[in-house]
Image (cartoon, rainbow, N blue to C red; front, side):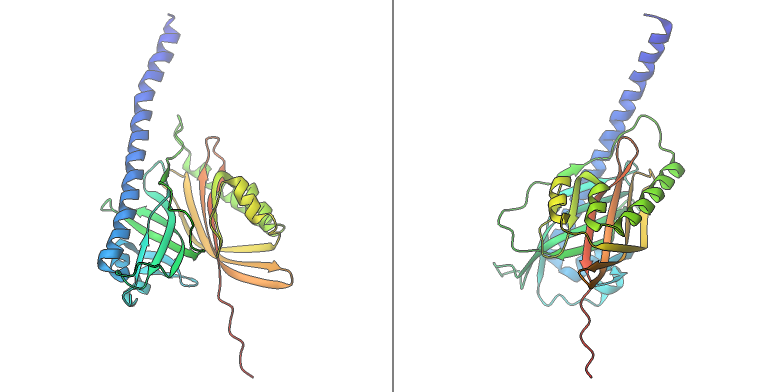
Length: 296
């Protein structure tokens, strides 16, 4: 074996254990995030909605109620009225830096703990951020309604970060995301559904009110295929992982649909693929309530 080949093999063997350790660490962190989400749901049943949300929400958390507002302040004055909120994660993703992650899954509401029949069903999307004390806290939490499911929830799907041999240039990744968002925003003004499908990852999850999530690019295309509205989105907040491979944006949208202007709020989660391209893995829209007519 030549000296050059020995060096190459030696270098590869030195890299592989490190990569394995990184993958192991990210999977451990992802499982810890799912466990935290499950603990959050359990606390909601045992201690109530208000107390559990105050426990697991970050001080600067955001909810849609209906517009984005501070979640900690909102739930400080929230009244449970005996209702019980139950949920479980069925999808979770995390950044390479293990400081940012997302969870999604179904929820159901009951009038009380002793009630057997739920009164409402839906889906949640939560963005989690690692805190200075290493705990996970929710920084964005959004829920939508859907019909009563006919099947029980599936097992949780873990989406670990894409591992790369070379360290990521954070500044370059930030600029790449900015460029992707500019191109995406322009495409939205021409064809909302087409834009989302074009920028979707293969395992995207699309959330729209009163509909079950569209999982996967093909299903998303079916859900959004007839949605050719011209849309504008205005971001009012967001963030990115330290490893620059997972990011989120939220804000307001306006869409022209058959001579009617629809307004509401959105949450999008972006993730880099192996080739470094940014793709959307979660896209949620929630309509704003229709204003009541002003009496004459």
